[in-house]
Length: 480
Image (cartoon, rainbow, N blue to C red; front, side):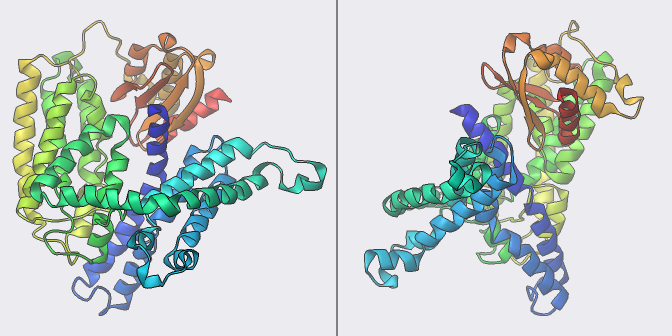
């Protein structure tokens, strides 16, 4: 079950990766016309509307992305089926359709059906579509129906399946919707404390990939909060909308890079060069783009107690930002790019105070991390036992460092005899193996990767960083 949920979390990263495009377009548009929201500038209006085309259709992106990501062959017919699934359920359960089915006036229909086109239903549509693809993409029908065999059968079976799903949701969705709204409202009514609790659990769930489910409640329009959508569209309350995003900026732009500096300073002398290359790249990625996994996975499993401290500090940061009503938003993650683009949005409130807060958190992270690492002799990067293998950086000399890294990682995984499948998300290789005992973790770590996460008896993740796609491509060449 955990493996399935993690695969779904990885699949969600494909549509989420589209959001920066919306952030850039809308951010530039608002930068040009921060007060008129496009009314005073045709160029700004064009950019804002172009960005809204993405933000307003997040559920469709989720339906297509999840279907594609969870299909075993990642075939285009699975993505098409995801769209078919989403259109089927949202049409059958639209307010007007429900009014016809129930024989009542539109005004008397449960408000839940007015929110049927949401991220949750988008994800569900993608899951159903992927399931139908994995089940029916190779089915052969009789000669009379052979045209509809195989991949052509998938959208048809998806539509039929979504009719059944729609029938279930007809009764279940109002209950689910009410529960989600109650949960979201329960947290939101806690104000700054609620934001802090959200931030804490957001980081704590990163290892499992289940943070995406939590994010969907607060960031998207599942429970009516829609913090990202409302912030970028300007529909909300200044100083309040964005409270589930703002507190991440001090952590990702300042706190984690400071933690990386602390880990570099506490590394063993002969391993400082290796630690420096890792921490510099990971720290820059966190500061500039808000991609934190290279840093987090570098100590998450080596020093889990330190990671809990990081989760607590993240919760405190969100609580502080919410308490003082400092807001900024992001389309992708809380890095410098999104901070600059969002700082002049209509709902941005004293965003530069987040930079001051970030400087304070940088000091806290550095001092606390350095103290805890030294005090408890935590095995953070550069502090491993001397007996562990260390790979020299000669693989970069030929200008094809990704091929050399991929070859070393694949060999460490056990090669063709042990590797069943290899996939990747934004920063991780996700590998299925026959026997975990045949995996040489030290050989993999020797390539300089930030970390390794064993998630089951036959499933392992290798955290590479934002260049993971190139490593994955090289591994695929080896496997062919």
